[in-house]
Image 1 (tube, rainbow, N blue to C red):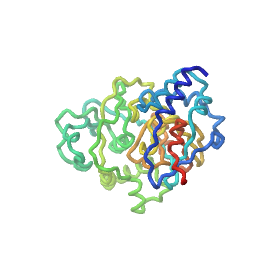
Image 2: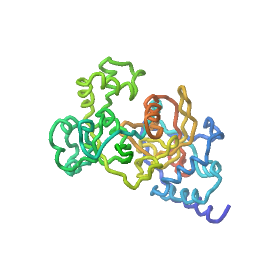
Image 3: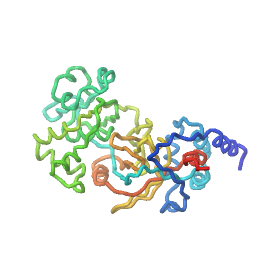
Image 4: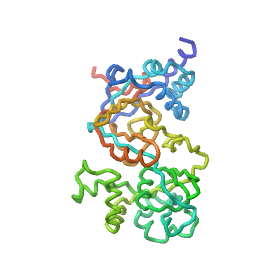
Length: 346
C-alpha cells in the first residue's frame, strides 16, 4: 500500500466523529458476507455512481475516501477495505417504493389543449413559510399575469405527479424538450392522496398505485379535483437548460441521478452520497449496491428508500407498482461506523 493510502487511512481515523444517537435508533455492524448477493453485484457500476456525487460530500472522512476512489481502485476491494456495512433501525419495517422522471406534453404558450401552468416560485413564497395552499394557488389569481409560467401542459393529473416526483421533462410540439427541476415549495406538509382513497374505502392499501390514482381522478373529474386538493403541498420548478438530455434528472445533491443505482433516503439517518446496500423483497427482488443521492417529502425513516427507475411512462409504471419490504444497509467509513455504536457499560 502506498504512503498516500496510509495517509488517507490515518486521516479517516483522526477525523471520524461519533454522531448524535437517538434513544430509539439502533446501529449494528454487519460483515460483507451478511449481504445477500454482494459478491454477484456490479461494484464498478456502483463506484461510478458514488464518484458522481462524492466530491460534494463535505466531511473530511468522506472526502478522503472520494480522493481514493478517484485513483481507480478495484471497486469491490475498495468498498470492502474502507467501509463497514451498518444496519440502522428505528423499529419500523423497511419499505421500498419507486420514483421516476415523468415526461409531459406541453407548450410555451397556453391554448385550449395546454391550459395547466408549470410555475416558477414567486418571491413571496420564498419569504413566507408556509405560503398559500394548493387549493389557493390553483383557484385564485395570485399567480396569473406575472410571467411565472415555464410552460403549459395538457393534463392536471400528470402535473400533480410531476410535483410529487420533483423533476421531469416537457416535450413540445416541435420535438424539443424542456427539463425542469425542483425550484421551491409552498411549505405545507405533503399528504398522500393514495392514503386518503384508502381511508375513504375506495381501495384497499395493496390496490393503490400511481396509475390507479390517475385513472380514478380522470373517471371522477369533480371528486378527483377535490382529491388533489387534499394534498396542500405545492412544488414550483426551474428550467434546467444546461442538463444534457442523456443524463438523469438532478437529485438533492444537485447532480444527475442514475437509473437503478440511485435511491432517495431520509438524510436524518443516511448521509447523502453514502453507498447503501439494498435487499428488496417482493415479486422482483433487488440485491444491489446503490448510492443515496436524493430525498423526498414522503421518505422518512431509517429503513425507507425510493428507488429511481428512469424516465418516461414505462419507468413510471414500474415505479408506481413498487411497494415492497426488505432491508437497507448503509456502507460507512470504518471509523465512523464503529463510532456509531453505543458505548459499552463498564
